[in-house]
Length: 228
Length: 186
Image 1 (cartoon, one colour):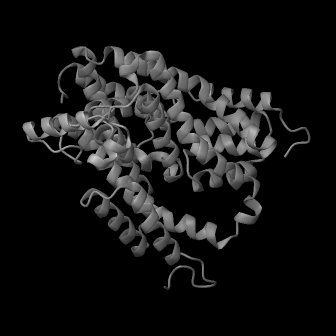
Image 2 (tube, one colour):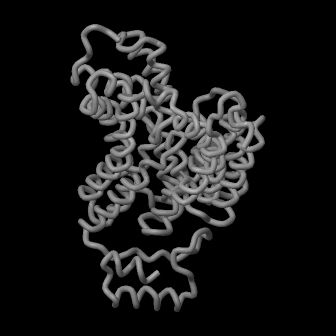
Image 3 (cartoon, helix red, strand yellow):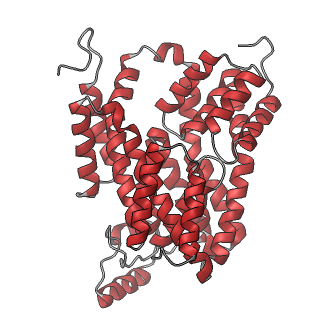
């Protein structure tokens, strides 16, 4: 724990205070799982914080398999447990917002960047949000351009075939883990879990727009049937 | 492809039209309707090839599709024009929604509604794995790989990057095409 803090420029006194307060409250720092985990943010300057956001998403871009949803639990880990940008329920809220809003749901990254810098004021937060989205898209866009221009050669290459067949099953495993992780993060009462399972089945069996499910569940939440 | 390739401006406007038409969903269908049927930029076959490439490579599918269309006519700068057209309006709207969220989410009424919406969104996330399960159902090795990946991440808390870097090459070696008996024998 001390190493990343020192590397990111925290002074020894902030590190000491963080360790002491963690020891005093008897909680583990940044362990995964569990809603009551105490998360201690690294103390960075505003610019340092922005660079942390950009670097994180630049590095993850090329791991966005299967249309980008494989990154969801990594996003959750980073923003809730590793860098403490958000609480667990804020992450769940932002995921739902990104799914409900028009446009590709991978724009969630912009919301995470926004949340990361929200304490520094809305304008800085917007800068961080736009930066985060650019950072997650830039490397994959460059690869995609190269792939388009050389597709004729790539199409029949054994590397292409092995990549497609091999990464499919891994994507499948990751997506199941992501589903369970988001369900945990949502952390609703029994009625909420029932709604989640029903929505899952309806998503698979019908072609109803998911916006209807969200609107209906939102009403159930407003009435107090679903809570957390 | 057509004789006069679309300019950067055309690409930007075309993708903007796709993004605006797709408010409420169906991005891929709208993109086909506008790019293939209305503007005639790509043949249906070229469009489907694009979808294959977009799904194969890292990155969100619909966004990769925009990159494919832009890059097909104007290379990297065309791809960036397509991305800007595709994302500018919906992303700015989402950022405004985000600012509203962080300003008001502590209000009890907002939090109660969101608790419900989150339950529905979790159901959508849960369905993602099941959606692609069918295509692997008859391949026991694929199911084993998927199960091992799931167990490593869910129970041993292995992070995504090491999972992909270790399991990826192993799976690629297994599925490496070998003449007649493709991938069925080690």
